[in-house]
Length: 402
Image (cartoon, rainbow, N blue to C red; front, side, top):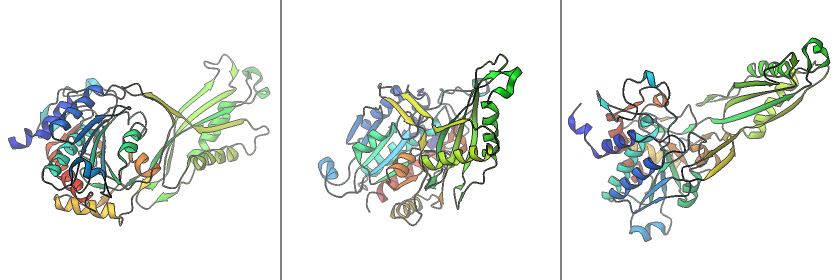
């Protein structure tokens, strides 16, 4: 690997981020590191908002005042700076926080998801600004607590900046992402009637009822999207009470389902899907248990003390490949000598907020491989990081000159 690809400003920032732990709720040091880097890069305005996101804005023609006025396109580039907690430490072959570069790869917890993309975006936008290629303001956001709940902590930055287009920088091998399935966590509670297990017929076994529902859910035929694939429904938690049981038929049981759903589906449509499973599963039961179905809630606190208590429903989204945003992004990637063919994400992103909930045209473009997130020895190639800088420079130019 040539030495110049190792010692570049973008690589140096990415290494610093790799060496700065930033688990969800504990991102302050990494956020301040990015904010300082954006100030040093000449961003026109840098702030840390109430949720704890670092937001740097590079203005287009006319300087600060002129860029905020009129109808200039406004691009927001988001990369979440939080990581999952370190796991499987004994299996790592490098220090997860050592910023080690080996054989053209930079290693570190969260470097693929998404610290390398944040470094690439900051330097790419700074380059576009320096070269006079921005047609309107571009905000780079290092956002917090995405791993706790996609999109929620980012909302303050989006509302403040009011972008006309958004790039989520989840890793996708510096490709053009145009959609994803949604994610919901459904909580299903079955209430029966507890009794002594020696007289089981006198009770109404909530665990048996829930088991029948789960079996029916596993037999569902799910709708399919041309590109995103089919909806998935996976049981991820099961519990019953009393626990531990002392010769007692359980009177209450609970399961949680992870549902990866398609554009157009709603919380109510998913609840109705589960209710229909119960109707079929218990159709021949002489006595029907009570059923409650709803969304589980995500509760978390950011490093600034901002508190969130929100339903776990992240919208699916799809940006049409003939839309102006995708066409302009494709042209940008051609200019950057990158693949413009549209692809999509298999997991959930902050695009659930910007595209799915708010309807803002959104694409994905990020450093590293999608399947490189949340893994032991997490890494990105330096080639991908360099491609990310080129790509973000071109995307910032093309998506603000429409």
